[in-house]
Length: 193
Image (cartoon, rainbow, N blue to C red; front, side, top):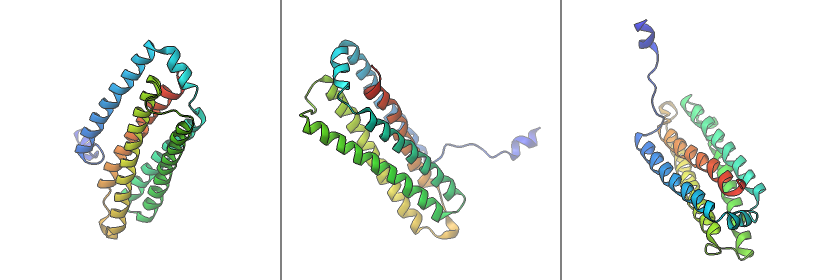
């Protein structure tokens, strides 16, 4: 029985341990913002419901699909790099980044549409939260894209026999946090009434 335990590989968190501290901190920060939104909404239910109707749920749903697909592609990239398949890994990574860039483009179009309607950060309490939450999330998407792009450059520069997925695992862990945050943010801000 003891030999069975000895032959099993030890489980570890993927990526650098420091990224997990960042993930916990960012998760807690967004958690506080989500709670503040929910409690403020209770006190201003009619305003929040009326303002929420001005959001395009379809665009939010497309952005959700883009981020979920991007995360799946990034996970496939990690698996490919672990298997020493640099070209395949770079292809999946590029597809994941394309999904993230699609998210950014749609979010910027959504902001432009709100601006054209005269809706901004100080329009009302709902839109204060909307722009703060989605803007803070957008900054995380951009940071994730930067990290993934740097990992892609690192993969191109690695020697074929010395493939190392550690940096990509680290960036992927952060990218999955970005995805998870959107999976809470989208229904909370766009859908729940």
